[in-house]
Image (cartoon, rainbow, N blue to C red):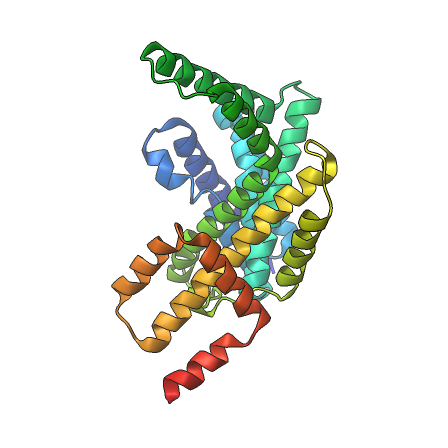
Length: 313
């Protein structure tokens, strides 16, 4: 028991030190921080895998506290994102949770810490990051418009077009942030799992992308949103319009991925070379409406079994 306690304390101190070093490099060193920022959570993940949750929470809290001594208040947001994320990933691996659970739990924690930091900035510091971002975007469009006008190439109705574009962009910004958060969480998981495997951790393996199957509920949600959009006239700028606009983007994105997965599955069944998969993935983006339809068909019908049967014949 004393040896276990000593091991827990020793490794905890080492992981806190390693977390602080990675955070400092990511905060102060340009170019190199592009790489290290993906591994800030690694020490917390490793410790959370090896020891109980209470010990992992303590190490997580101390690590976030140490970030203040590294970079002051400016370093806290970075630590507040990566330390809890590492705790959730490591705890999920220790409890032998599924790959889907690991991804959703990590994405939700990332989203939670992002929302908390946004609320702190707005309520305590009086700074609205989204409004500041939109101001920067508007200024950028104004500068582009002035430059085009100076050269006599300003399109007719430029100001109206920009105003409508920015208005729509502001409405769908929440869904863009949600997608970006979950993609970031997925990237962090993907780059850290091989390192953990090298360290002797039994990590879950993600199935091939061609095997991806979204819950059928996604299709029903999309149909509900589609029907409401067709038959109910939502006033632009209202809360309901914002909710349905963001839901549409998120659901279309998921069904688009499902469509690409179906294409990968078909190519895999045909045993075509890998360059075909690359070309098909690239072409999927300009043909996103067709690929989205494939995603809907894939979820609604058992089309993969049909492909397997056709391939056997």
